[in-house]
Length: 86
Image 1 (cartoon, rainbow, N blue to C red):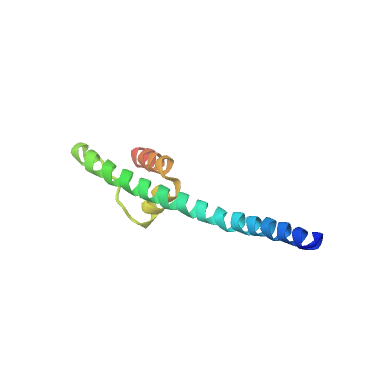
Image 2: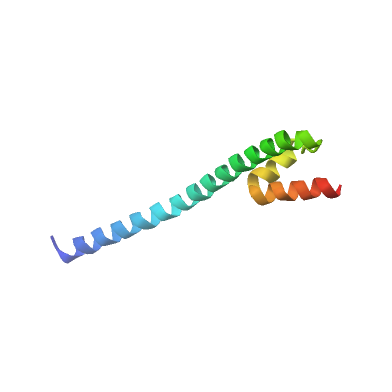
């Protein structure tokens, strides 16, 4: 094996590493968004169950689900504050 083959092999390994990094980033973002969506939905459900005893609930529709799902805990806190001041 000549030095060129070794250089090509190292370049191929480097390019493979770069491609894996590029494709793993969207997967991490997607998994983070899915985790926030699950956490936000569970928090909305728990809020409505506990808040029902105090006649406080947040209706679950497409907008509240998107806010709670995209932002997670801060989104649910925003919805609570929004409901209190409206």
